[in-house]
Image (cartoon, rainbow, N blue to C red; front, top):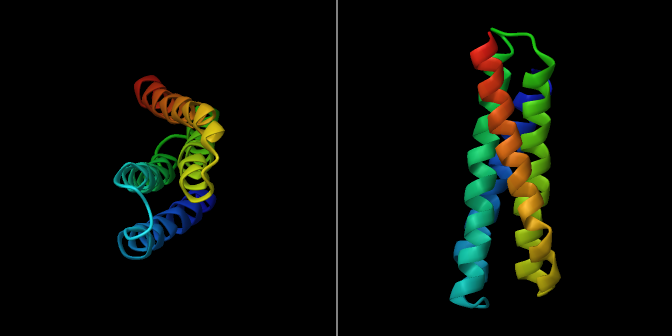
Length: 121
């Protein structure tokens, strides 16, 4: 539980910093499309940082390996989905768009495992 609270807090804080960075520092240098892509990364990072708090809370009610796996799937999704969007926008390496969906799959897996844990419990 402590790991997911800690990671959720770190990812949420970084999302706030990156959101401010995008709104202030990048607005003048990025195309509107790239800024929108960056903002999608920030938004999904924040959503799933909050999901880590849900997982941490859920562990106080249910002990389950699928619940732990859900938390790690959210972590992987943040790193791969949001991270690839940030690097894509900041470096112009468009090929990174090919790995972004893997992070989306990790998010879907995380939500599925969280739902499965709740239904099973």
